[in-house]
Length: 370
Picture 1 (cartoon, rainbow, N blue to C red):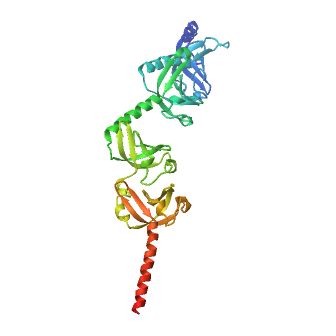
Picture 2 (spheres, helix red, strand yellow; picture 1 turned 30 degrees about the vertical axis):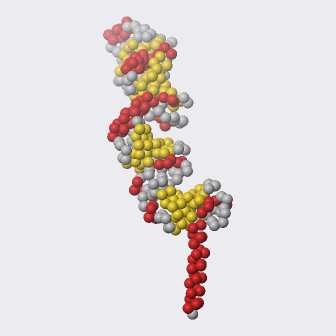
Picture 3 (cartoon, rainbow, N blue to C red; picture 1 turned 90 degrees about the vertical axis):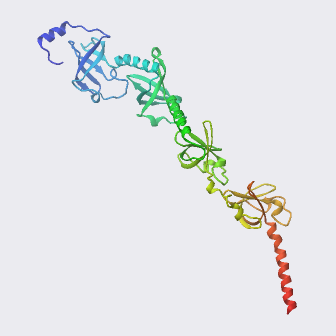
């Protein structure tokens, strides 16, 4: 205890304090688990780590130092050893309750560091009030692992305030939803059909991929991923991929994206490459009972009807062809409007006897001349 003058000692001997009283003290010594304060009484006050804060394992020497002043509440005037037991935490809780109540009523956005990651959510402390943020209210998307939030400062609002049950619930989700809605609104005001955007893949499904284009997610449907055929979007994209897309359509808040840039359209000059009569080479892409679809290039398929595979009768294409097999055929029909091309191997085979007859006739004429 610090030295006092005779007058001070006399004054202190006459002074009384009571449990529940709020007093101001001066720190005279600090240990990792205990603070000693001069509270102007005949005995010094003891403030333990447990009565200082709700945060676990705090080293008190890192938060206060000798000479600091602080308001505390008296718990016991005599702990059996003549010492006064103090609490800072409970006084802070009383004040914290008022602070949280105001934040709840005013829908104030609070900021606090995550104190604990629990099985069902996160725990944060504001003015010694422990607030629980359920996993369902941590984010606007499902997050299985919340450990990434440990020690992070997060923003939230109080969605439930019940001091009698010591129930304080925080909500971070509604802030994220509101923030994204505002970003989406601004984005929709600034974009138009045809705009080229840089985006990041957020999710991939069997029918397409959702792309974050800077404030909103757009859908890149499987049919718009390539001029060619895409069997499974998950084999083409993964979460985090950066992509360059253009806006194909906007309907309310729904944004349709595409990777089928017109300057890369393989049908643009197809009329010349696949004119009727041209001999072409391609690979069998898929088959049906009525014919085989031949990929001439990415995005351009042609039909080889079963009746055009051979001069001989064939029941179904799979009897003589297999997927991936390369074939050569003649273009017998080209429809640019419907983007349809018809092929025939039979047309090439039919030409062989005629060429042979012409060769034989030419040889006979030469023989006669001789």
